[in-house]
Length: 309
Length: 275
Image (cartoon, rainbow over all chains, first blue to last red; front, side):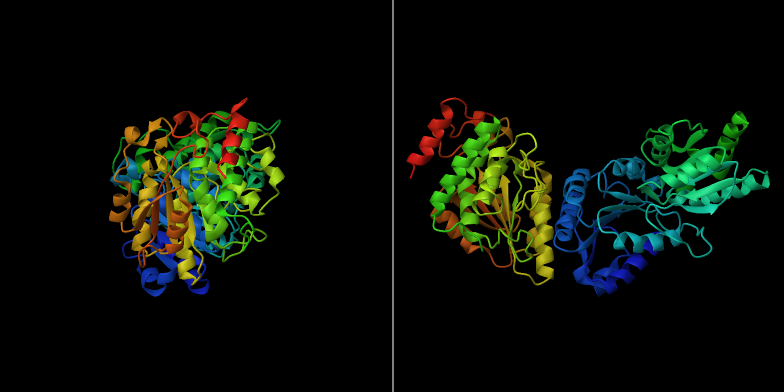
């Protein structure tokens, strides 16, 4: 995802000199082409995320489309108030990009586990929150967030995620992409869990359980229509995210469902418990420890589906 | 350009002080001392130094004034009203229900306020972004940031202080309203900043130390920027909290209290008598 993002952004930046890519001293071997070929559109702000975010706001308020770039929690939590006041309140055209959302840096320990970013960012007024599901969505989403006027939080995985979409996609901010249809339940995924969601649906299909899969690449504004249609047309709703079950996709969907008069829909959030992970290891290892493998997700889903049948 | 016509900088400063005293008294709001310590700085900037057009607040070539110490906004609003950004009657609504003029500098609905501040340590990074963008676009505008002394405790200011000289932002000017009193006491007792000019000098800024109530010194320093070639400028302005009203001067109490009863006419009379 990181490379899909940077390649697309570089292409866009070559055509639009308002685009300024600002890094918090990260991106070894991936940001050099910005530095060397379009130096006026590149800035290394150093290891200083508060200043980086303020600079991005100041440049945006002077006509630029600025992006801040760092890993895990550094471009979000470290400089939260700069995002809130300088970027969001001024509706500054800043795109905050985090690579390594979730457990991408699992072995780097808790400081590098981005588990609360979506929830925290989702609370901020004026901020659009996008977490694409695979490299195809990432390329389309990069174009969309640059075209979108206003603050965006863009949460990416790291590199090497599998491609899920096999053909063209119609990507629009705020509109979920239906990956496959089914009537028994809907599995709504955000970010890099999309591949897992697809695996889960394929396996369940072999057992005769038909799952609708939605890629909710935009967490805010949430595609409420897609969620409510799924609630009407399918038997249960599951949300899946590489994030705490508090505050992110699961919370957003729960908030929506809970306020629908007369709607009774079995619902479960699949994600990471709201505690600091005691585990250290690769992304796959961490996901397995937290019940986010296809097998564990299937067990979880079957439990609920059997309980309601 | 829309500097106030036919009045001296000292008269402009007097008007700002009178507005501030009336505004804070009417609203029973805090921070009068912080407004009065930086009034002469503001009067010099809006009276002579800044390039702006009050009728076109978003004119892209304008100099930017960012009030990092957003709690001093009553003085900023007064300067903006006096220079024609909005009607002076607005000042009567300061801090009252339904007003545009909030108790911290707020850009929404208030022409001339470049940046909403109130949380300290935000404006200097933003000004770095504005001046860097200006340089890269070949524009000649400058950014002036008024910092309080207390907010020099904020690490974000020092992140920006490192950044600006490295990027040769000679179009950036910081003015520190060094009135020596912060929220809970004397700066020296809370977190001592001295030697403050040396710190900025060591970070690579052009630095000048002046009496922040000496209008000639202010004019001279602000006209002389950049103080060092290819470098941002830092003017450490020694000021007095509550300057201009004898019973408010250099007293922590007036960070919080508004003039009540006969304090109001007494304060206004002192400002008037200083002509």
